[in-house]
Length: 322
Image (cartoon, rainbow, N blue to C red):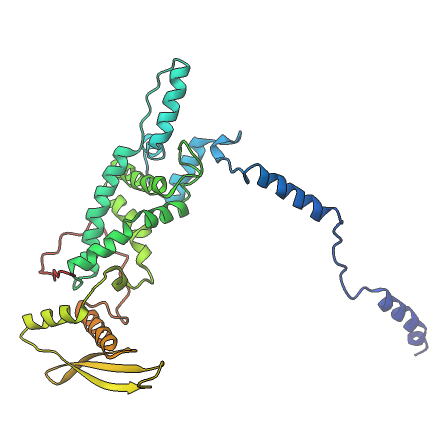
């Protein structure tokens, strides 16, 4: 006990010297004014200048193309891949430089590869959608295909594949049209290097998968869904009867109506809206989703089809949306 009493002052002294909090890092007063001055000078010079990576001393185009092939795990021909990343504007710029230096070196741009890749994409996506959406009308499939082939979608995919810094173009940063054309050219180069099946799997994995988690009904605008539904049911000798089956808050700003659609005294769908006509339209849209197999509870679109799908032989809906 005596030994413990003698050691207690030492323990207490040690605890008092132990810091309980970490001191904040000190920032000198001149840092903030200096950063503000540098920002002001940058603004006067027209903003921050972003230079392409191919202007740096350590840039190695061959290494970048090799890394691109290995990153995608695709067998590209080196010359075709270089051609796919060469924009027409870059070729024109280099030809002007060569004229000044009396040099004539032929360079190929990506236009031919982009045309081949775009043609194959249109055919493959059309066949793919017809297989995974067997009941969806051709007009709806055209709307989905138009979304997948749009410049915004292709530029988004191209950017996330890492093409932005490898593209050879006259101006930097490259715009969305060059990004989209480069992706088309990459697909064209893959077709000539490895064949159509690897190119089809490439389109499936990077472009068709953009539909993951999306409502495909949004890509097809139907102006009059009730008239379309009536026309479809007439082909099957069935008549549709809308009924008002619920209303809340009538004659108020928060009014809500529920309309049900009946065929042979059986309700096939219902819809809600702030007016009776809106509820009727929503009910017709729900009925069309059930007919086309694109309701909210539909199975996810399959992204595992192998090879190039064959044309679907069965009859499909072809409806005029006007």
